[in-house]
Length: 191
Image 1 (cartoon, rainbow, N blue to C red):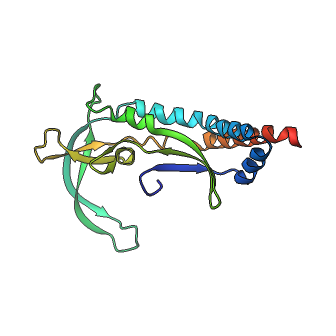
Image 2: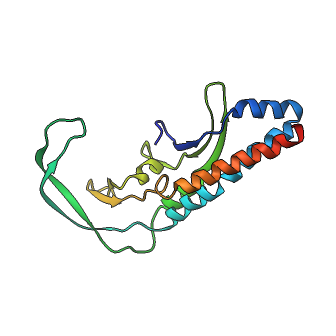
Image 3: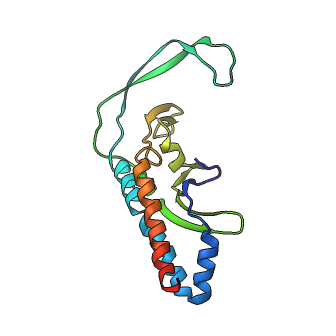
């Protein structure tokens, strides 16, 4: 995910800034219409992300602590260390904070046509809690949070990879094709 407060990934068309500025010079409504078409091109991906968020992740059923071989990614020597592993439990209905609905409500498609960067990107600002962007936290496979009631105890919880996981290469390609088609359609009267 991108740094900062937002999560995003990008589908990049060619010369987006030039195309939008040319259309804006002819008629500003054409440029606005093309930006709207770019947002509509991402509807399939947004629907897949929201569908992933509509499912409730499993609960943590239990845990055990054991010795595991750790292979560092930085090339250092493997070593053994005690690590806790968690088992999935049953999934139940309900929920307290409606976190998944708030994250889904923050998903959007945005067009960037600046001097340094041009892209059609997906973002979510998500709800924040205690200084943490919960949209980024919920994307992780597992995270820990304080137990409700302020007892000082912490509990593990499975996350729900909703942002990148449900988006397939075919969806990205269909979106890129739709963007290219909307650009061709917008420029057709001037060709």
